[in-house]
Image (cartoon, rainbow, N blue to C red; front, side):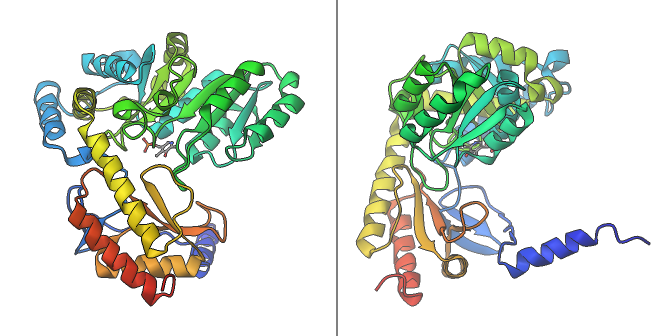
Length: 394
Ligand SMILES: *Cc1c(COP(=O)(O)O)cnc(C)c1O
């Protein structure tokens, strides 16, 4: 017998030795302020369920009704026989919500990036990409075979000098950024980026996965937040975070959407969202269009939690969104802190290399509209206790 997989054992051992091995916990309850995880009831500060829609009764009912009417599967890719009226309805309602000309659904936000970037640029073209962009953007860029130029994080001046140096040598150019950066919670300087894109003739694309349902009036996202409607060519969105379900989409100029329908490979070669997912997302969009109550509650919770963390003496970084990193820097300390929190009943994930650079480890607390004051107070008491125990605060 050959031992052609021995390298995997070796690599896994190396990950464990370096404390970089990911252990995955199992959830046995719906998503909410409390979770049942690995047999324990814990306060949930991990999920991207910003508005609490993942277990909202209205979404659950919409999904059940769609199953009754349309069954469980789409049964074909959309270009063959898999486009439901529900898909088109959701595209129309997402475009309306984002105040964009049109929208196109994908199976996930990850697929939306993988499908869209290679449809817009290819060999002979160039991409200017923020150095902290999400993995799905990085992979989409690589798949495109365009030249990739990473610019310093959220630094328009740094980007300008790279554009001045390189742009003219290429045919088409795409400027691409996360809207909200998921590990730090800071946001892209979109007005400056859009101005640079105009000056240097680049297409613009923003990934609003952590912005929609959070930023802008009623959660319409980062483009709305900056009043840039109609100025950004492509917005990528996900239906798995604030919208609480699963799926992805692109919103933007009608011309771009028409092109993606011809060329985006995950759209052409992979089946679409199920009827249940699609109907649940439709319900989520109507809830957001009817009221900004959930978005306001999310922000109230965010301000309260951040204020309290600062009063306790913790370093919570530069976030301006509900993403709240507790900066601990040291990898071992971060793992230990997160483990102790879990034992005491607070579930918040340690984030370390390679997700963030070495020496920049942190615990990421995610706020949600489902948190009530007493959930946050109970968590804060435990966080303070563990912080003192591990000598992070006094
Ligand atoms: C979460 C995330 C995605 C992926 O979204 P999915 O719908 O879960 O695939 C893409 N981009 C960014 C910036 C994200 O944070």
